[in-house]
Amino acid sequence: MTTFTIPGKPFAKQRPRFSRATGRTYTPEATVSFERVVGQIAVDHFPEPITGPVRLQVWATFAPAASWSKRKTAEHINRPHTHKPDADNISKAIKDALNRIAWADDSQVAELVVRKVWGPVPQTVVTVEAL
Image (tube, rainbow, N blue to C red; front, side, top):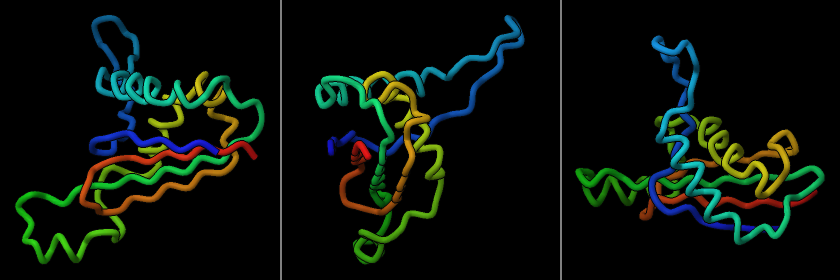
């Protein structure tokens, strides 16, 4: 089992874009950049990709707005985050970023748990475990 942390606000995979000029689809630069950062963080944790089925756990922590009162902030800490981005889009970004690093292909993810919560520090904690 391997666990690592991605600092900063949790990121959701963006939809592919379409260029009318070239007639091609492309992945937005923000998504490419995030996946590159995740790969750089994860590469030290995986000497080689896992070959069998995988369990993936993603714990996305969102910081309350600075404009919130101390009371409102305290009430929300460790409570579920029910605003955008969607949990499945957060997991898609992580799964795609870990292709050829943690596993050969994200189709190997046989079990997936994604949690979104409020917390004092924005971050995403990822746990990968071979089944």
